Length: 311
Image 1: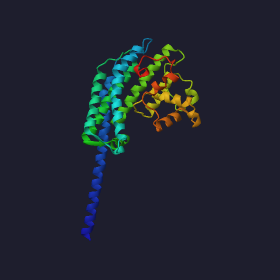
Image 2: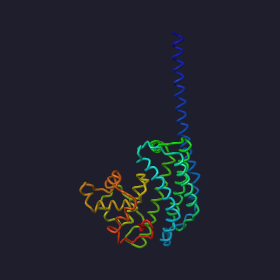
Image 3: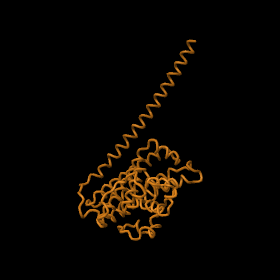
Image 4: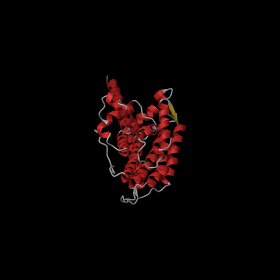
C-alpha cells in the first residue's frame, strides 16, 4: 500500500513538473518573441530620425509623388505582390490550405525582401514632404520585419504549410503582424500625400481626411476621387487588408456597385457594408480602376502616377 502511494505521489510530482516545464517554456518563447519584435522595431526606428521639415507650398509636388512611386512604392509593391501571390497560390492549390511551401520558396521571398530593402534604402526622399519620408521609413521597417519573419519560418522547418503560417500569424506572430501593419501605414501615407497634391489644384478638396466607419453611401457620393482613395486606404489599414489590389481598385468597385444599383437592391446603406460584400465575395481584382476609369473617372485631375494610367 505504501509502495503504491509512493508510486502515485511520484507520478503526480513528475506530471506537475512536466506541466510546469511546458508552461515555463511557452512563457519564455512568447517573452522572447515580444522582446525580438521590440528590438527589431527599435533597431530600425532610427530610419525615421530625419530632420523633420514643416509642410509648405512646395510640399507634395507631382515630382515628389512620382519619385516616391518609382524609388519606394514600386519596389515594395514588387515584394508585396510576390509575397501575396505566393501565399494565395498555395492557399488555392490542389491540396488547399495544406499545400506545402518549401523552404526554397521562403528563401526566395526572403531574398526579395532583402533586395527591395537595399533598393528603397538607397534613395533619399525629398525632406519637403514629411508624409513621404515617414512612408519610406515604414516600408523599410516592413521589409526588414518580413525578412525576420521568413527567416524564423525557414529555421523552424524545411517545409511549412500555409495553414501553419496563418495559425502562427493569427496567434502570436508579431513579426508578421508588424510587417503588414507598417506596409499598410506606408500605403495610407502615400494616399494622404496624393490627397494633399489634389487639394493644391482644387481648393474644394480638403488637404487631409480620416474615414468615419459609419459613413453612408450618400456621404460617399459627395467625396472627390482623392478622398475616396484615402477613405479606402484608411479601411485597408484598419482591417489589415494586405492584398494585391490598390485603394483605387476598391474605390472603382464601390462606385460600380453603387452606380449599378446593386448596393440599393441589397439594402446596403453604409460604405462599410459595401466593402464587406466586396471583400467577402472576392469581387475586387488588380487594375479594377483602369477597367472602370473610362466610365467614372475620365474628367478627374490625377497626378502622373503610372498606376492611374498604365493599362
